[in-house]
Length: 314
Ligand code: ADE
Image (tube, rainbow, N blue to C red; front, side):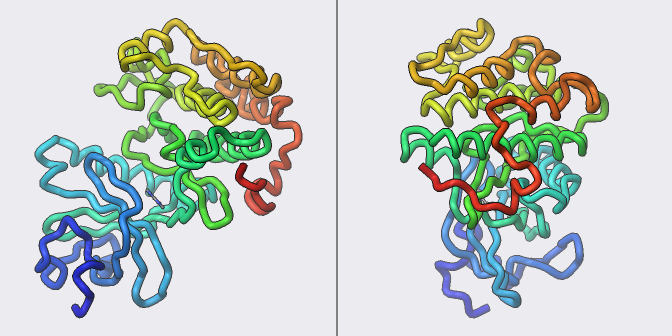
């Protein structure tokens, strides 16, 4: 192992790489097959790093999870759930980060993921103040398309937010971070633990911890609001006050907010999960097709959504 030390994952002891016993899914890949580069993102239990696969030269984002830290905080099951969710989603949709391999060594779990080189939509919104209507429409459409795929596979995300919407080389959307994802066995489930981020969490999750596909539609409404206006739909001075606003549906549109976008947000930010646009069973009047048919999205060409160029980010 002649790798310069700065290219190694930072959280691993220096001597770890040559000694690491690999126990990958296919029995042959390990950290030594990659050159690790800069940190792309950091979470509470993981660090995502740029990495190049040595033999192919292909670049990936590798999520490195510290096993000791996971164990100490009872999060091993969460990491396993994330892996299972990603495996279930497979490589079948361009708008969802694909898990290529997993492996582990003594200290860490490694998830080798699609690289989304243009980072989070969140940082674009921050930098630009808000997104153009064309961009807001385009990313709403891509998110709807990815959500329908995911929901049809029985997966709900439960923590949709602009930080989890990444942009690839072509500025197309890639949904990531399934650490809070849930594989549904029936339609609605009660989760033991509260998940999600304050500003995007649905009222039913706050009230009863009930999750369904419709909770992701609520978050979509919050995200659309934020892309167009540059602000949170629900924001109080504390997390508690934010939750109060969510429960009371206490939000208002800034002046000049596009009328069609406003109509769509109003049809997503509905307290009753069953009444949100797109929440109905496939084939019913209020299914995802009805969501796609909303006037705000009338100029979207769904057939070329993942092949035609993205609108300029502005
Ligand atoms: N940050 C977190 N996940 C990432 C990914 N898959 N690609 C790029 N940056 C990321």
